[in-house]
Image (tube, rainbow, N blue to C red):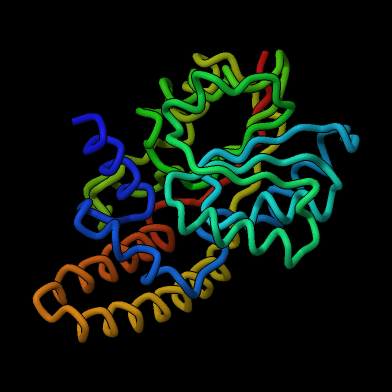
Length: 261
């Protein structure tokens, strides 16, 4: 039962509406390194707002293939630990760390985030980038993330806020808060907003559309290998495209830099 719950959260974080897709996500996403979050936005928010040293410790929870962690380690010369539940993503991250020559700064491990937040402690910065509700609804999630950072430590949160009507949302597997609701939740959880950056909607849609083309191609290939599952793979493409349309119309993608009070 616990494993099923974990797999459901993992699937949801990658815009998969069923755990049946989990064995195929590595193939479907093989052409993408950056999964969700923009590493350059994360880097910029840190550079502009946080004094850092080579001893600065960062944990990237739900690191995917390591794009954010490796970008931060390379650009800022800081220590980053990345954790993700998918072993194939962690393997890519390790290879990328070697490619970018940051193996001494980066450590990547497989782990369940719900367990990780109970043991990891003392980080200057935690990154939670486009991971959805893996740790629970927003207030619970923020309470969990706060435990891994130092007093007055920082959290980089990549998510989005609703500007349209909730009933217009095409991707129904995630409930977006309004900006006011996010601000109230940050306050409740004991965080203040140190900085915030919204995505360039036009550029984001262009990138997402290109990524969706890659995913569609891989879904078609899988559909040829497993004809009985073709509808399953194409439904994943549709979920990705729905989310892209939501971000272009009714949702604003945003990255918050939060500081624990």
